[in-house]
Image 1 (cartoon, rainbow, N blue to C red):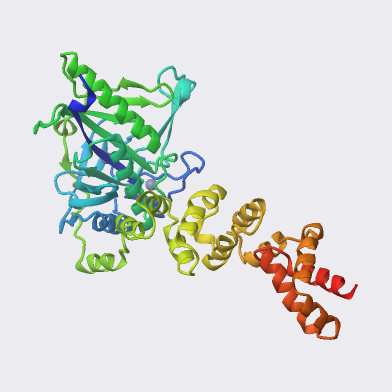
Image 2: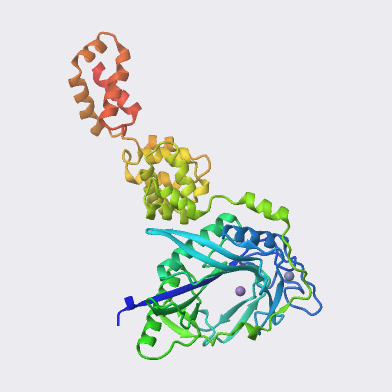
Length: 472
Ligand code: ZN
Ligand code: MN
């Protein structure tokens, strides 16, 4: 009866909104948060007789993403109409891709503690998003109990890439880590903001369980409505537990779609899942097939940088897996490398970036690595409050670490005086020389005091103090 006798099988379906300037099949501008229904035209409102024109940039970016996911790029991809009714779909069909998608057969590597987790990418295809429905009057914006619903067509026709993974994930944690690394990849490609809170990255999970050792897949369910990494992991865990309970009670899991409610932890059935034939797919007669040119494929290949997964593995050598993974998936690894390259202690740099720096919310791109390195180097010599203040300011244009370090230096004469007295007492010969005219020895005394304070003292204050004592 233990959960250990069951093996979860999970695949993800991920929708990524592309941040192109205009929509997928019309020239309407894409603007998140704009006044509702201000970016519409007959094409994205689905009027009769309209002719869609594909967005070339969206095709290019999908090819780019496909390449990053190790997919084969189809020489010829076809748009299909996927028919269904919903108030957010004015045409009664979504233009999507069906049996001839743009990208197929990829492989995405997620580094983990114990080797690489390899996740197959079944396909990545290009389609259009539906409009956005806002339910008014109900609890938590849900349809149940709502007085009425509003539709905002600004979102209708937004380019969407749908990525379908193979059922290669074996735990909620693996699903979460796969999604986090995929998101970082998308962001680095510069094709989407991929923000779950805004809905520009959305993930559904297909979940089933089977007895450990079973080869066949059992009936799966689909989980929707999960808008954070934490909720996705919790939703999958809840569904795994539910299915194990169903099987162990002697009943059968039914293929169905569930909403996960993060507030209560409850799973509520949505509808029985449609099969592909229900959608009456047919080739979109108004669009010619997409045939990516050799020039495009070549250019995209040249634009791909080292992928996040590979960078985790590379950084892991000097750090540890968790820290390397944290740096990469938070987009701080390039800053880390630049700071470490100055010669400052690498682990200290990584720790500061993952803790105190992360807490400031400063964008890594805004930071001058050489200046940040000075702060990391001085972190134990200056008061903690001054260190945090300097970190918080490190993203400001023209930020100078020196100014903060000087301000944070030890200036309290009550603390410095005993040190000065001791240095003078320990060096009677030099004191005598100074007093007989060798004024140049002042620097020697100041240096000794600075060393006593590990460089923390304000040199100007020390100098004045030493001179006053010697001249007394
Ligand atoms: Zn439009
Ligand atoms: Mn889709």
